[in-house]
Amino acid sequence: MSIKQNKQPQPEKWSPSEVEIIKANSNYLRGTLEQSLNDEVTGAIAADDTQLIKFHGSYQQTDRDLDDERKRQKLEPKYSFMIRARVPAGVSTAEQWLALDALADKYGNGTLKLTTRQAFQLHGVIKRNLRQTMKGMNDVLLDSIAACGDVNRNVMSTSNEALSPVVGELSSFARSISEHLLPKTTAYHEIWLNKKLVDGGASDEEPIYGKTYLPRKFKIAIAVPPYNDTDVFANDIGLIAIVENDELKGYNIAVGGGMGKTYGMPETYPRLADVLGYVAKEKALQVIEEIVKIQRDFGNRENRKLARLKYTLDRIGSVRFIELLNSRLGFEVEKARTYHFESNGDVFGWKKAVTGSWFLGLHIEHGRVQDTAGLKLREALREVAKLKVCDFRLTGNQGLVLGNISSADKLKVQEVLSRYSAGDAKVLSGLRRHAVACVALNTCTMAFAEAERYLPALVGKLEISLEKHGLSQDDILIRMTGCPNGCGRPFLGEIGLVGRAPGKYNLYLGAGFAGERLNTLYKEMLGEEEILQLLDPLFGQYAKERKGKERFGDFIVRTGVVDPSQSVSVIN
Image (cartoon, rainbow, N blue to C red; front, side, top):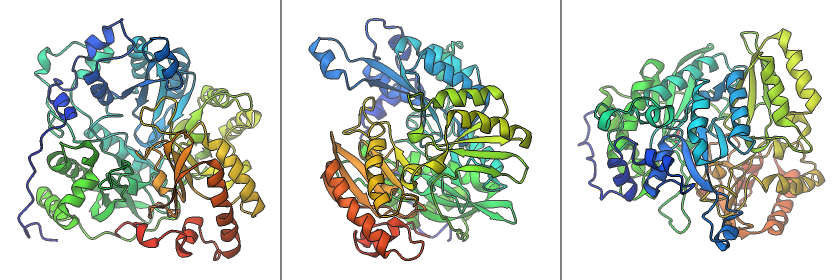
């Protein structure tokens, strides 16, 4: 495509939203965070600072289970903070795992959360412990800067090196992208790590982002076919690795994905990324930077609900977007190369990489690492970490891969896990193996309904139906979120449940098993009994009428249970 075809689109003039004004006046993300942290009268921080602290990797939250009672007692809400560690490609060391595990006990709620973006979350940290927690992370070379906020967030990549000989190179590139797109402000180190304050922030400069950063959050993921375990099409930029003879050549660039929507606003919608073309690996970082800059310049800064890159792309149009990108690059993105995805779930069990090292994929239900009466998961993984014989790799489906294990140490790791009966996906149903849920209640301020705390029980009831129809071991993707913002990527579940009100969900059906087709709204405002009653006959029909190895989502579309024209596929 010629880089000189049409007159290029020009950035629009927006009336800045409240958050845009906060960013502009923040002195490069400082705001009044210092004063807020030192205010001992309240467990909260100032309203404007609740926006700025996101850029530092934290969200202010309340325990919503206690809100009404505390209000009756004329007490302020029980404020606490979630801290998200930035972990490019999800790869962490045993030392880092042990440090986060200890911080969870010392300052958090005693659990670790593995997220759908391959990051760690600590929950329940109160304000006076924020600095100590951040410092504890920094002591093991972790940080939380840009884990949230209107910047590029944690860069995802396939983490299991046994799946492809190029996974290690992809992980390294994910780290390079993350470092390249990190905010350059020194505010993080000043506020959390007691570095010397830069007078007025005068030396700060953001050559990529500018003073007001991006209009909205930005997400990047890498995947290597046939494994789409990072859901590349759900990201602002998806990088599809093109490998020939076990050598990484470059990437197909997919642009404009995003899961969030808002009830009552039909102009908002989930969207899969369009595959725009191919670039050699040496040029990929330049292409990524220019796409980020296009979003910086053209994204909606007036209405945050319409500010993601997917809306920018649809407003400009794919053809003009590519022309604009080529013009800024000074060269043309090539025609996309062929590729094929087979699944977007995790691969479980022991797998040997070409290097000779072993990798073990473990199931962690909804990414919550905790000890319960029935399973001492945290204790088991702590014991594995103490062996210092492996690293810890988070997956895009809230799972965990224990990596780089020698043949001599493999039995040591397996002995610990077997002693605790921890992480073995073989004993689970296919539905439970691939279930994903966001945190939702009680801490997420956006949630209308339960997700993480409820989905295990619902899956248990669905398993009765699946067993009746002989489908217990069939892999079916189910995803639940407490709201439509899409943190658990519910619109890519063959069964998607999105919270509308306490105990009520919208049911979506028919996504593709490899993450290349969105699901479609089937029924609204359903309670548990209605969900069970609707899905049971569909399971029965699927068991009797599917063709060969046809996936549940494909069957739902083929048989017209949902309208195929409403299931949007990526442009390939």
